Amino acid sequence: MAFIAGAGATNVDLLYQGFDRLAGVGEELYCKDFSLQLGGGLPATLINLGRLGISTKIATELGNDIFSNFAKEKFTQNGVNPTNLYSGNDIPLNITSAIILPKDRTFYTYGKGNIEPDEKALETFYQIAKGSKICMMQLGGFLPVYKKLKEEGTILVLDTGWDDEMSIEKYHNYLELADYYTPNRKEAMKITDTDTPEDAAKALKQYFEKVVVKVDADGCIGIDGDEKFFVPSIEEFINVDSTGAGDAFLAGFMYGLFYDYSLKDCIKFGNVTGGKAVTEVGALSGYVTEQELLTYKKTLD
Image (tube, rainbow, N blue to C red):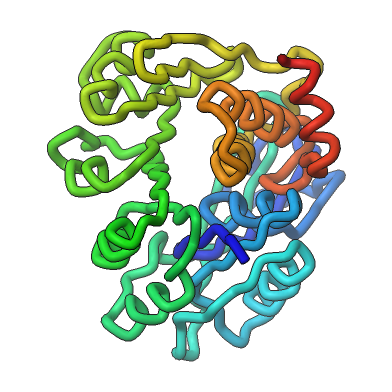
C-alpha cells in the first residue's frame, strides 16, 4: 500500500484562550477557554493527511509521560502509525503553553526543538520510510535517510520554517535533494535574498521545475515549467487563529501529489486545507474530510 512518511519531534499545545491581556509578574489571570491539543509541525501535517484517508507513518520521540500517552492516542485516532525513536526517561516532546489574545499570541515552550538522531534512529526511520511514495523533509540529522529514499524513487517535499540565517548556501544539501519546496513569502524572500515573493519564485525556478510560494492569506504563487499562475485563497474561511495553517496547506498539497494531480490542483487542495485550519483555535481543530476537500476543489476549477 502506498503511504507518506516523515520524521520529526512531536509537539503538544496547551491553549489558553479568552484573555484580554497578559498577566504581569506576580499576577494570576483566569482564562475563559482551555484545550489540550497536538501542536503544529510535521506531525500535524501527517495527521491531516491521515484524516484525508492516506496511510501515513511517523518516526518520532515518545516517552512514558502523560503528554506522550496523549500524543500516541491522537496519532492512532487519526490514522497515523507512530514509531518511537526514544528510550530515555525524560519527556522527549516539545510542550507549549500558548496564550491566545484578541489580536496576538504568545508562547512558552519546554523541549529541545528537533530530534537529534543517532545511527539506530536513522536506521529505524529508513526502515519505516522505505517504499514511501512521498517523504516529508525537515532540516536536521535525517539527511542520510533522505538521500537513500531519493535514490529509491521517493518524492521528497521540503518545508524549512523560518531561520534568521536561512540562505540557498546554507540549505543547498536539502534543496538539491528536494523535489518540492513550500516556503511562505517571508521564507522565500529570505532564502533567495529578494524583495518580493514574485522575484523569490523566479529565483527558486533555478532549483525547482515546479515552484510554490505561499503568499499568506492572499493565496499561493505557482510556476510549473513555463506556466506562471496565482491561486487565490478561499474567501469564506475567516481567520480565527493561524496556528498550523502552513502544516495544513502542506497536507492538502501532498494529497494532490499523492494522487498525481497537477501542481495547480495541488495548490488548490492546499489552499482548502490551509484555509480551513485558520477557522478554529489550534493547529488541528479546523480541518476537512476527503469528501469535503474534493467538493471544495470542484468549486475552484
